[in-house]
Image (cartoon, rainbow, N blue to C red; front, side, top):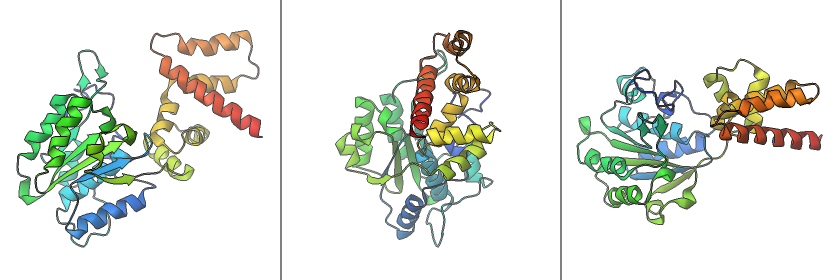
Length: 290
């Protein structure tokens, strides 16, 4: 991937999963992957599921980083790999020759992420796995997220899953596994992740968020349902700003209502308004329980 200044893809942020050194709350899943790697009989496809924003892609990159650094796992006791090593730096830059990321393409002309993973993007896996990994190691494909595959791209990926090359690993992240082809799911080992605890959600937010206000972080964490990704959306959106303005008003006068409404005056504020409504509903429900 190009450097952030040359590639305006909004996903290319400093805390992107490929750059994350730490993962909180998924120790059991990590232990299972480590055991599989150390067994010498690592299954070729893993379906990592759970709600959006809880660390599925972070776990996939973490495991890929481990396999590319320690191909035979040996006596390793953790998936931790220092980000300073050469292979980890390549992954962070999106430039490791033995790692393919299949995701929705960024449309630079229209400045938006495409709604689906196109069939041509999925077919890249075929040519990728036709090559031999460097130093006899692994070749790994991360699909983030498998829910974004359309019918054609799902079938293109399935063809490779059905006849996987040796020393190949697929790591598929999915928020909605029920929508995936049963034939894809049947070829994967299912690894289900749970939402994070409030404490772990806050730990992630303190590392990746620019918000310095601890009350803001805690409110977002409490409303996120254990999803740091969702909490970040809450913190960064106009909807969250409007909700903060609402909370700051001692009385909801007509002028105050107009001020809050101005946050949603643009043409593309539907998502922000939805976030505001979710925050307001959660706040109202909490007040009702008091």
